[in-house]
Image (cartoon, rainbow, N blue to C red; front, top):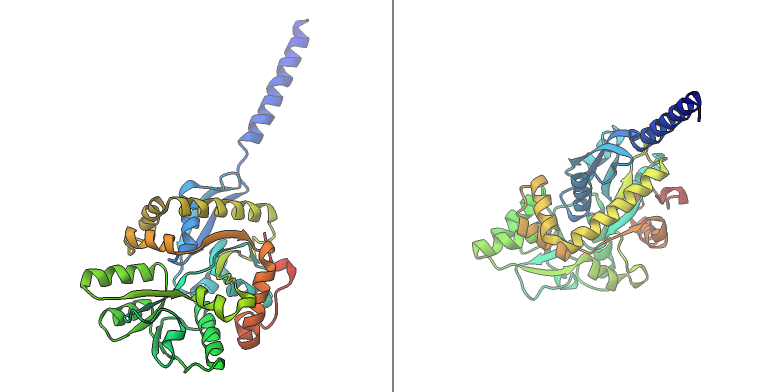
Length: 328
């Protein structure tokens, strides 16, 4: 082989190697993305995704942001300050029907609301007939679900439950601990934290049924209650490849949290230090955390949206979302 030919071959080899290496080290399409969620169990897999930088092939850096209530979530979404968020299943449906091209990627939480009582005989929501219930929710999905359930109980002949709307969750917790409230509807991990505090203070409190259990009995044709999942904001919902990666990574992180509840609780505590590790671990064990793609769950979601639309159409924007709503 002549020297000139060898040099040409060597030059070509170096050029090909540079292309291959450049492709392997190509910069991700997004420098950073922000995942957001409330302090409840639906958010824990997102935190694990941030901890493990689960989308490294697509994103340079994942960040996490906590939101306090659905009103704040809607503002953050409108300002494009977050890219993906955990959300009650009604929030993305409402936004979609108002013209925002958001997508619901999955549903992962099916039972997160629990009845807590000072009376060990009060186990079910039917046992609350004629009594007062503390409710720290207004206008969001827990309030809509509770109102729908109690409307059904009244139509079945049970005495109405008197709802006492508290200022916030902490107010409801304080009222329960001081004996000024006898029954409350709360989200995990606040239920586990309340029961832990009550035990420390020598106050007898009892966990009753979940709202999911009561819902299954009241609405057997819509027995599954797809309460919360992950949504893609309008400015990024068009990226199907990324949405699919987010959905897969979330499902893997949710499975890890279910399999490793203590390790998950210790991780979450670093982001939510106001919750003790035992309360977070208890919340994980008590919550049905089962991540499934939204498109596969369209029948269950439409059953829920249709039921809510009959009595609270404003919760979903007055109609069922089109098929393009269901991601990834």
